[in-house]
Length: 335
Image (cartoon, rainbow, N blue to C red; front, side, top):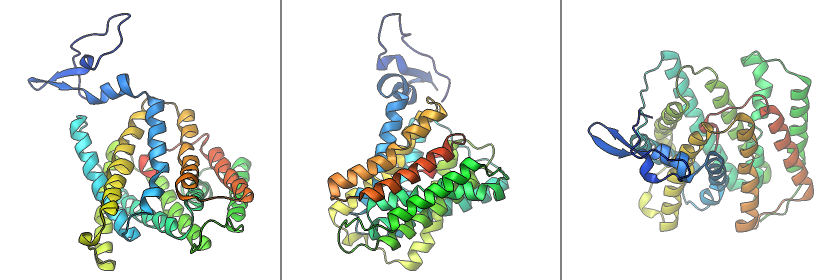
């Protein structure tokens, strides 16, 4: 944020007022919205909880958008990028995009990976329940643990091996059990799509390790924009886009996915990262999959068998162990 001059300093015993966060810049007074949100209305924990609940609800909306998965991913990237650029202007965040050639190459590759990660995740929602898709998607940190010794030269400890084995057992329990949730599902295919999405998600996490001297917010804006650019030719070559044939609900839900689930959720997420410690962030991140399962049960009537619940606990527990000491703060690794 830019340097600010507070008009009315907060006096002892007086609660903060929105007027306390006006700032003088370039010959006029501005409302310092970033500071206003941070200090008055939304503390860090509330912002993180809100962001995770938003991420957790995305499957409910995607399932009701009558577009192909690649089209949804494209429009999500476009709408979300526009929102973040506008938010950058409103919050007075400068986006420089001056970076090294190595970073540019990695941003293009990771942007493409984010786009295809979305496509496979949205396909998972179509073929299986939101619960199965979400839990298989959370296999990504396990992929990172498997690849880290080769790519990042990290040591494979007994704790990591235990986490990998536990996650695989959990996945087997989910795949090998019929939850009886709805007809017309192909759960194995859906879970395979979820694992493909997780693999692309894992590749983004690993590539982000090599992107240097670029703030997280700028990196996310760049990657979302590049995801849209990469998906654009793919969608036009493989799909016949006909926006005019969409019903009102699909259009509304697509706008919500772009603005709320991509733009607003990422703004809240990054703002919360500045205020919370790593352990708190790791704990709160599990609101996403847990709320996803609960909302799918409430609004879609999706259920899980007891054995599948045990499998989900094993996967999420293994993921927590893998993230306890190494926590990624990039929002584009979220849904």
